[in-house]
Image 1 (cartoon, rainbow, N blue to C red):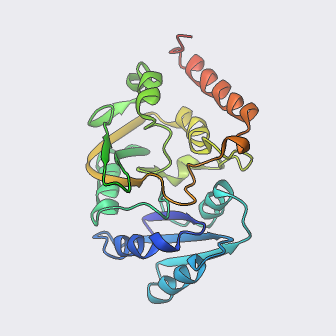
Image 2 (cartoon, one colour):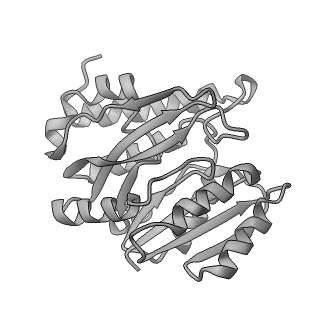
Image 3 (spheres, rainbow, N blue to C red):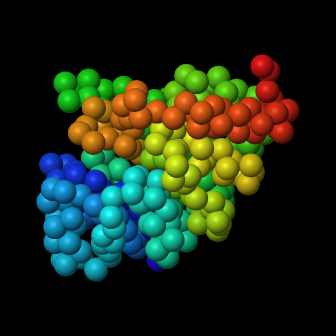
Length: 247
């Protein structure tokens, strides 16, 4: 198996038919899709089961509701692909998405590739996040402007729009105590292991803003500011270790 697609699912029944059409129409066929039904109380679990019945590449794991980080960790543990990519159940991908991700990371010979992300609002408004560049770069080249570009776009912290060599991930997992910026925390643990990154502007990931039960939406009362401080300290230490921290 070439690619493992990991999708956490929690009460996303209104979005899932469209996502499954995107996945079933992929021009790249050597993938497995691991759907983690995170204790959904709507019909999401049943919808996942139906697609698994018609396509053996889809596997459904039903778990008690434990949050998106735990669901993604379950998906990583169950994955058998050489590469891993994460998709949220309320987002969309073009039919060449997996093919383009795979060809790009193979041709560039890197461990991590990042594609274009386009944010879409229900109003129809769209905003494309510009990549730091096009092609392959040493991580040392990118670190000079890493903090500024992350502050401007958030591109380095998004869980979506990336394909990762599973061997690189190793035993790195999402911190299940974190409800906000858990994806950035995950990649802050991954980047020190990365030597080169490829930026891929030949395909894009469609990130739906303001969707119901979005994993990116957290109420102010639920934010653990001590944990957010811990993430920022990890971020600071990462930049200091790479000698690019400017205070």
